[in-house]
Length: 64
Image 1 (cartoon, rainbow, N blue to C red):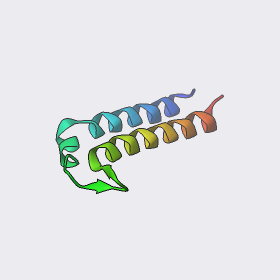
Image 2 (image 1 turned 120 degrees about the vertical axis):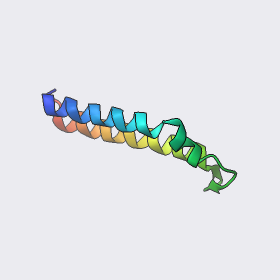
Image 3 (image 1 turned 135 degrees about the vertical axis):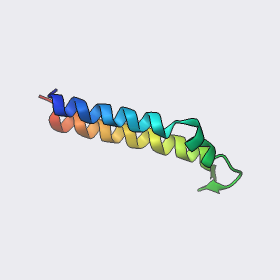
Image 4 (image 1 turned 180 degrees about the vertical axis):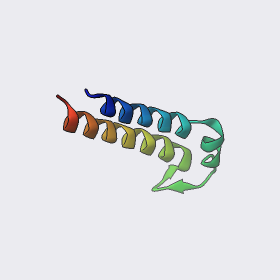
């Protein structure tokens, strides 16, 4: 993998670190729900799913 693609993966790691940071997570800690799922779980699973999909796209597209 080239250096620029490694940098993209590093940026994803930083975004995930900031996304799972406690002050941001506490914004979604409420009794409300989306699609019948509490917001905090919806936030966690959506963030994980997006990171997996973006990582897969980077690896598949730029794998040499």
